[in-house]
Length: 339
Ligand code: AMP
Ligand code: ZN
Ligand code: ZN
Image (tube, rainbow, N blue to C red; front, side, top):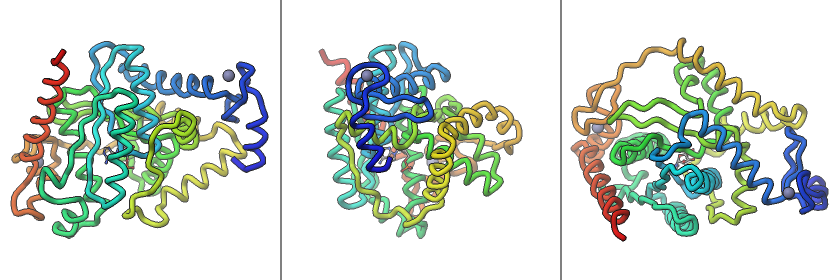
């Protein structure tokens, strides 16, 4: 939003009440006050959750929280909806060991979970396996970001399995999903594209489905939600993030299209969701089994986490991580039983 527009919005009234507007939603022709903006955002998430069948008593959602605006907004909205519908939300944060960035993230997460009164599981990688992400990457001779992604996917899935969760929720917003889908088009990777819906399937006991509650939430809306509700968030970016990733250029381009065609980003993800069945029918069939060391999902004999840790530490560390997570989950169960 330009400074001029921001001033204009600041003076404008909410389209639904007399209060001053904090948000202008061009594609919906709405100006909204804080309360009505919150309601608008919560409805968006509620609709996605309804479509995938989460709004039921007894469902368990593990919310992966990084400390950034998106996953914090996601957790705040999930926590509100969980009270309304009776599903359970448990936050999970992985301490990756990326210097001050990780320390700040942990601080914000603990504050957020306290404020929202959401149970949060903290998994400190260095404490569990003896290495931070950068150290693991150095020893395994792999790029830091790829090892980081792999560690996060593995631990989040392992937590989901141990908790018997229905979904692991990620903070991907509309802009992220569009950028990843366009990247998949550039690579002609339909198999990858078929995974970018609001949810993916669970393979019981081995792999927990992904949930993207912010599927229809624009990046700027997610930031605004965090700001107007004063959620504790980290603003800094990970020091290992590439300087000009392709995703950022795609996002810039899509935002300039959105300026001329309000709502085009929303239409993109909605059409993507409608087309998922078709893309899935074109996807290459992937055979999955269980890792011979840790028992979790693996394309080959050994999962990528066990492979990388074997290279870095001389032995696969999947089993160690799983037993530590089992211990943490048991302590959560004990606490929730306590009066
Ligand atoms: P990224 O892979 O960094 O783009 O993050 C995608 C999503 O993964 C975030 O929106 C979070 O839901 C989750 N995530 C990222 N970092 C962490 C972390 N350190 N601990 C738990 N979840 C994370
Ligand atoms: Zn209002
Ligand atoms: Zn394994």
